[in-house]
Amino acid sequence: MHIRDRIRELRRVRAGDLRPNPRNWRTHPKTQQDALRGVLAEIGYADALLARELEDGSLELIDGHLRAETTPDALVPVLVLDVSAEEAAKLLAVLDPLASLAGRNEDVLRDLLLDVETAHPGLQTLLDELAGGSGGAEDTPEADGKADGAPEPPLPDLFQIVVQCRDEDQQRELFERLTGEGFSCRLVNL
Image (cartoon, rainbow, N blue to C red; front, side):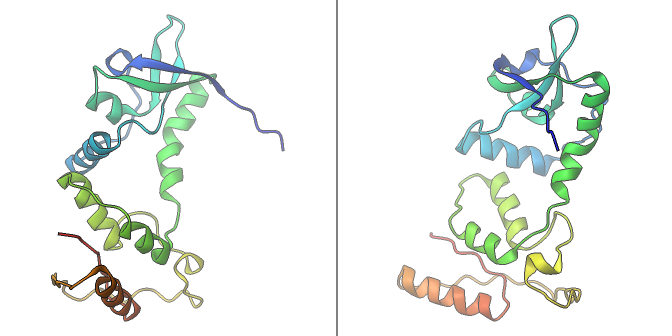
């Protein structure tokens, strides 16, 4: 199969100069806006916006509307695509839903979250949701290690318990023990 490279160039463009796509159907709740602000504050731009060049030379967004709205005065990385209006519409329709189809490997995610810390409350909310197993596409039996594909039992009432450990080794030992017994845990260094 021949796959075309549709990226024409990478440009740094003032975000406020990008034209929002009038067909953008995505909305951005406050929780998403807060989490994005946290990522931008703690890391910065680590992904390019997608746009296509119109006949008048302006750039119309395909992906990255919230990032552009959040930082209108910033110079942002934009991948300028060589796509028609119809192809741009197709990308606009499927990029986010395509990403949301991914399953979750809870063990790998749990290990990843052990190494992720933030001081930003909006980003912490997102991390807490990830740790709790909410959001995203349905897990596949292969992704979460279940061979029989049986549905997860409903979660009981949730409680938060803070445990103070004498050192990091004790903390990790307790974490492994509790997660091995099926508890959802998150390590926090105070």
